[in-house]
Length: 286
Ligand SMILES: C[S@@+](CC[C@H](N)C(=O)[O-])C[C@H]1O[C@@H](n2cnc3c(N)ncnc32)[C@H](O)[C@@H]1O
Image (cartoon, rainbow, N blue to C red):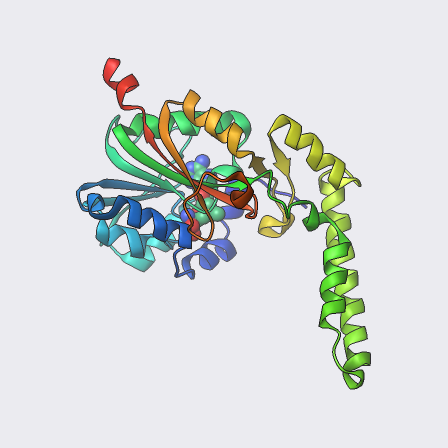
């Protein structure tokens, strides 16, 4: 069964799960280092804040902090967690009528929240975020990397088999291992067959190659238990979308926090973090 993203994010199970998370991704730590002392003079919008995982780390550093999410359940979880220490609002990134132009210095949309949108909605959200940012303001987000080297492995039994063989230990454990491996093998085969059905392709390698040619597309990849499809995009296409929406000074960060423009390094990760600025000049000309 598949359902829409908003319904899923509004479930108690997911809001509790996100509210229980208490860590920063290494790439988010890198962003804090880049923004450094400037954060203390920044009005920050934490879009798609979920259960407030990033709040604890960013909010005390910013001049002022607003957490926003279109799922009421997530906002309720944040209010329960942080009381009125910070400001939280229910708001949809695709149409933020509640928020005025040029009202933030920094917008964060972490953990691939933007990948739950349709292509058209993604473009609208990029423009909306640009609108609420002041000229020269920063936008940071992460997104699924269509050129990730490991992507085809998500749909292949080979890596699971390899892991099972590598796990095989001493002779006395062999029977136990064998049972475990058969069990694991069945589960992997079921998962892969299910994803193939959802993606309507039993040749996932071919499907991924086709998407790579168009540089973006949707994949059921077992995120959120394979209940929703996810937007994947190449770095080059993401740069084009950002530039078209008026952003510049784009830098890319590996999930491990390493800031680099090297495609081969970035493609070792399933996610890429982007940090960019609204085009100062374009906005000032308006
Ligand atoms: C993957 S979760 C990440 C939550 C949080 N940022 C974190 O890192 O733990 C994505 C979040 O984005 C929110 N979201 C998705 N689409 C949205 C939209 N159009 N407007 C606002 N929030 C949205 C979801 O409700 C969800 O809380």
